Length: 100
Image 1 (tube, one colour):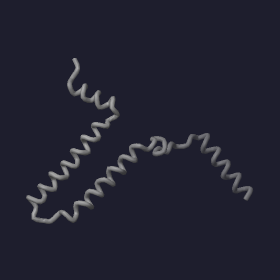
Image 2 (tube, rainbow, N blue to C red; image 1 turned 90 degrees about the vertical axis):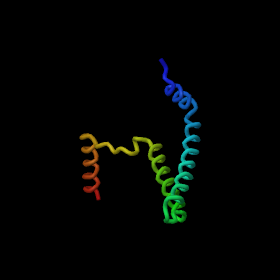
Image 3 (tube, rainbow, N blue to C red; image 1 turned 60 degrees about the horizontal axis):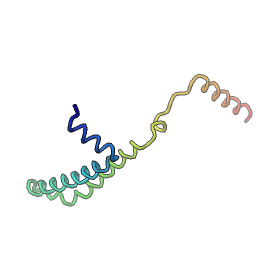
C-alpha cells in the first residue's frame, strides 16, 4: 500500500527538487517577515539595523555548507601512504640529499 507521503516525495524527486526549493525559499522569506513583525511588536530594542547583517551572515553560512556538500569526497580525504609508497618516497629523499 502506497503512502501519500511517498507519492509526494516521488513527485519532487522526479523533478529534481525544483518545486521543493522554491517552496522552502518562499517559506524562509515568510518566516523572516513573521519574525521581524514579532520582534517589532514584542521587543523594545530596535533590531532593524542588525537584520541585514544577520541575514548576510545566514546566507554566507548556508552558501558555505552548500559548497562543501558539492565538493568531491576524494579531495577532502587524505589517505595514509602504504608501506611501499613510504619506502619509495624515503628513497627519493635520500637520493636527492646525496646528490645535492
